[in-house]
Amino acid sequence: MVTAPRDAAAAISVVPLVERQSLREQVGNALRAAVVSGEMQPGTVYSAPSLAARFGVSATPVREALLDLTKEGLVESVRNKGFRVTEVTDRHLDDITELRSLIEVPTVTRLAGVIEGERIEELRPLAEEIVRAAKADDLIAYIEADRQFHVALLELAGNLRLVELISELRSQTRLYGLAELVQQHRLLSSAEEHLEILDALADGDPARTEEIMRRHIGHVRGLWAPHGHE
Image 1 (cartoon, rainbow, N blue to C red):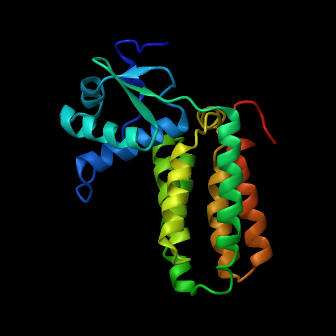
Image 2: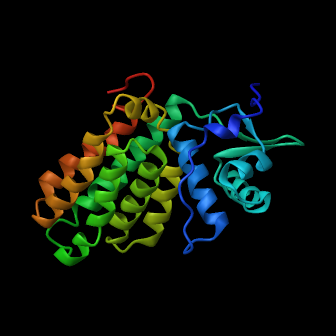
């Protein structure tokens, strides 16, 4: 078992907090993104007080957020020590990616030519935010904007249970290679695919939409995978 050094929380990226969300939600989103991106390492134990100091807030909303992540299976409680990021196998990640492809690709593809252009354009600011985050090599902002974009995109299909399911699957994903892409400044091409998806939907082109969606989700176990899955 690997325990955290005293300054383990210092490795977690911090984004500005906004008033429209509770501290619990904001900290939870940041920690969730840090787990998904691999900034918070499996096996490492993080304490609520050290994370709270990192975010500049009290320990209470951090502890509440960590309990939310525990329910999602992202972290587990370590008695009298803190919380440890749960480990997932390559097989588990492959299974998640397959499920996402089976559900997300046809769902979004069916929107082409059906959804009004105005509703599609409402997502463009989020897609542009993803590109801005990629250009700035801001991993946490990228992950959070990416999550919001895909949730909003799936909401256009009108199936809230589907949105909940995909949100849960996405939160279980670990994009371990993403930090390396940031270091290599290779995140931009993936970010720009969000704009391509919107363009294909606006053009009413289901074949193009499907191709981009399949390629985009495939990055989870392709471009971003730690072992170079293709």
